[in-house]
Every structure is written in structure tokens, then in C-alpha cells.
Length: 496
Image 1 (spheres, rainbow, N blue to C red):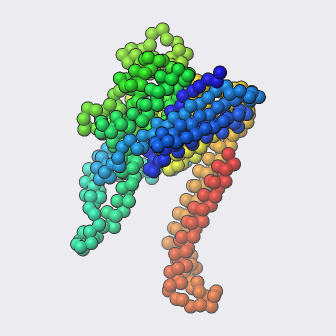
Image 2: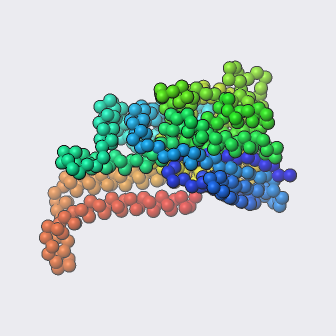
Image 3: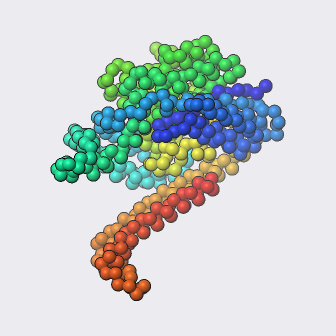
């Protein structure tokens, strides 16, 4: 008989997310990795309304009969709440956002390579010296900007909110002056309503938070009640990690289900927003409910660890067989800004042996790293598989999963390639800056571009030509750098 593993996939904050999207990405990543390791994987997938389910049947190399079945259910909570009012979310972010942004930056500067693991050592990925230098260069302007905002937030927050609250007014010449500013600020409305609005409702609104929680709670309770499911794994991303934590907290329906039918539960958080939600919740004073994410421990019926005392007589193996938390974070992901902070772990009330924090290399890009986890077939997908199988790879003797040279070669390939991507970014940005300085400061260099572009064609179009050639002298190099980097990035990830 094949062993059945229950897997709940919990998405993060993404505007316009369709039911089944995240589940399909995660299930395909796992199936592809197992097939690359020599196994045979069958896939089924179905979406009914807002409920997506999928299944993988896995046969080990050389075997015909399936040895394992993965039953996937998506905890789709995006349709559990209405669109949030952008103006209210903007006010909330202006009040709490600057301090939270400063915590993100401080977390990064405290560990520039962002590569510390649980035993206090550094991860085994090379390029740490380069990473620290590159990270410092990338963080410097971000830190300066956020520092200015934090220092001036008492003055800037009311001003920005006042401008944001205005609409584009054309009748008054005085107010029409600021209409371009207000129009620019209101371009953030979709982000505020559809993305950050989810966090605002989840932290601040008790009723909607319960509705969000139910989307993840229901499949977990069903898996606990299903006698055919041997173990349960939650794979969560971004804000979905906070939703998952909330579902597993003491006093909830999942805790009751775990008490009735104990099973091993593994929580995998990728790019977790739990650090952010913890502090946003702790500083919210709307009601006692809003502070739950900064004070609720994980349920002892799930973890096997009583909230009031350390476990007695439980071996690490026994505790890990009850509950295990694997936190995966990209080194340059601005959302988690590192692994779960000490305050979150103290709140969770778990034994240290039940937690593993692992940095991965997605792209080492401050803007893209948060969305690259489930496309990382080298460092993330194998860890997801290992987590589902209770900490062990499903089979040995394959070049992908037994620590042989092929796996190490792929890790080195990704690491070196990502370092080259960083180097190329710096070279291109440096080249653009040098070009602009030369163009602006050197009259003879600029004059070369201001020549009459119509001359080679025997035309005399005068000052218009000079303007066009000067504009092209500025735009073309930047466009070339942008498309060159895009081509190289696409080529590199296609070779992985």
C-alpha cells in the first residue's frame, strides 16, 4: 500500500491570484525534482470554484507500483475578504510602515551575508565575501532613503496622507498644481487594496481574520480526520506563513483535531512574513484581538511541547516526529529579512530541535528574491521533498539526493551564476552612471550627439534633430543595458 501524505499549500499576497495557481507551481516543482531523481510521478489536478486539489503518485526508481501518494489541497484565502479601502491601508502603513521598514534594514545589516544557520555557523554556499560587499552596496541607498523617511515621518506622514487624500482637481488652479502628485500616489491603490490590504484585514479585523483562517483550517482538520493520511505538511509562502501560524495556534480547531488524531505535522515557511506580522500586531492598539499574532503560542497538541514548561522525557527524535518547522528564506528577501526573529520563536513555545532555518540563493536580487522560491529546483524543491518525507530523502543511490558530486555541481553552478548576475548588475549600473555624468559634464562629448541627425540623409531638420539625437544618447544606452541584463538572466535560468 502506498503511503499517503497530506499537503496544504498556502499562498501569500498576490494581486489577481487564481485558485490553483500556487498549488500547481508547488506540486510541479516537487514532481519535476522527483522525476529528475529517477522516480516516476503521476499527476492529477482539479479546480472546483475556489477549491483546488491535486495528487502525485510516486514510484521509486526501478519500481512500477507507487510507494507514496501526495494529496494536495490549496488553502486559498484570497477570496476570503473584500478589497480593502486603499486610503485606510495607506494611513495604516504610514503609521507603522517606516518603523517596520527600519527593522528590515537593521536585520540585514546585522548579518550582511544573511547566511547564519541554527548552530551559529554560516551556510556552506561560497561567495560570502562577495555577497557581503554586494549586499552593502545595494543596501546603502535603501538604508539612506528609509532612514530619511523614519527621521522625518512625523512631518512626512501627515503631508503624504494629505496629498494622497486629495483627488485630481481641475477647477482650482491652486489645487491643480498638486494633482500630478496625487495622481502618482493613487497609482499605489491596487497595491494598497489588493496586497497590503490583506495584511491590514488579517492583523486589524477580527471577523475577517477568522474568515481568512478558515480557508487553511478546513483542509487541515480534514487531513487529521482522514485515517488514510499518514502525515501532514504545510507549505506556505509570504503572508500565508502568518495565516498558517495562526491556524496552528493554541485553542483553534486544528489543535482540537490534532488532540483527537495525532499525526506528524511539518510546517515549511518560504519567504515568511511572520516577522513583519509579529511586529505589526504587537504595535497595533485597535483591540486586544489584533495583538494575537504577537502573543499566541503554537498548540501543544500539535508540537508536543506544553506552553508553560519544557518537555519532560521527550527525546529530540520524538519531538521532531510530532512537529517540525523548516524556515526557508532567500538571502536578499526583504519580506522576512532573515530567519524568524528571537521574539517569534519565544512566542511559538517550541523546542529548539523542532526548528531548522536555512538560507537559500534564489537570485540575490532585492526585488525578485521573494517570488523565486518555488522555481528554485536546486535549493528549495529538494528541501520540500525532504520535509514531506519526514526529514529523509525518499530514496538513495540517485545523483540528485544522496549528496553526490552532481548535486554539488548544480549548487556551485547556481551560486557562481547568481554572483555573475550581481556583478553584471553593478557593471551595467556603473556604466550607465558614468555615461550620464560624461554626457552632462563634458560639452564636447554631448556636442557629438547634438549634431544634425539629418545630415547623413541629406536633410536639414535643425534643432529638432539635435533634441532627438541628444535624447537618444541618453535613452539608448539605458535601454541596451536593460535588455542585455534581461537576456543574460533569461539565458542563465534556462540553463539550470
